[in-house]
Amino acid sequence: MTGSRKIRVLVVEDSPVVQQLLAHVIGEDPRLELAGIAASGEQALRMVESLKPDVVSLDIRLPGIDGFAVTQRLMRDHPVPIVVVASDVRDLDIPMRALQAGALAVVEKPGSMARADYQTVARHLCTQLTIMSQVKVIRQRGRPRNGDEEPGGPTDRRRGAAVPTTTPLPSPLPPSMAKRQFRALGITASTGGPAALVKLLRGLPTNFPLPVFVVQHIGAPFVAGFSSWLGSVTPLPVALASDAPHRPGHVYVAPGELHLTAEPGGMRLVHGDPVCGQRPSGDVLFSSLASAFGAAAIGVLLTGMGEDGARGLTAMHRAGAYTIAEHASTAVIHSMPGTAVRLGGVTEELPIDKVAARLLELVSTGVEPS
Image 1 (cartoon, rainbow, N blue to C red):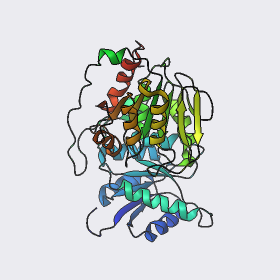
Image 2: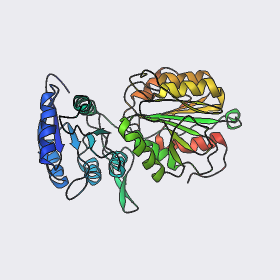
Image 3: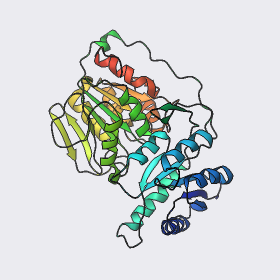
Image 4: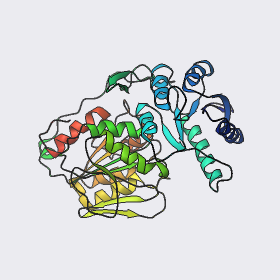
């Protein structure tokens, strides 16, 4: 945004009471202004085209077409930053599918002003709307998959920025690296991460020989649902990490508000201050892998805003680990992986659709991606 112009928010919400509440929340924030209110998915599609808002606050359960379908159509026809605003954290199938389709974040609905945490939740929503309004979203082209459209990679344009038309090909793996025995894989992602994680994990076979530790920046109330959803759409078993042993071929997601560290014998959850503004933090996870596994670890830093994970990945690189950063050609936001590249902490940059194949080369499974 330039000058003093406020960020224009389109609210998509069918409840009149919640419409008024969100209008009040947005009106109270000096950074934002209400562009309009849509009460259905169909109305939202028309209003985005006519009003051209800077960001959309999207309820997920709507009359007519749901928030998942709205996200798909907007990302295909009228790309705009979308923040999913969810009230029921127990059933996250549609919100998570919306993130996979191109929505940038899922946040908790403020609810009644009588709630003790109302101000905190409202401030978080406004901050996310402000931050996500700056993202240069990519037009997505869908392709049929089990009756749904699944977004493809970068295609037509980003608003205000050119999109590379080619992505780098992986270089041949050095023979010495192919013979190394790796023992752990760590992955960190933020904005755009759910879709990237699905693409990566879908490329790994069920007999993948390493434990996989994941830090995904997402609101604490949504972590358990995110973990369950991730396990339902990818081949490997997925669970919330705990103070317990880890097993090969299992994915462990850091729970909300706790740092995750990994050792050869197991995992440990740590209460501590946020690092790079995040808890759980990718820096904490990667640093623990550097210390505990050294050259026997692999680190992958995916799309995300800020710098979390960059210094931890650099620590892994200095310890001899193999480190991968998502290439700018596929990252929704290249800030996190780009910072790692600038710090000299990256063995190679790869577009997201090449990462799983490289991991299989590194672990020498001899199994084709599923």
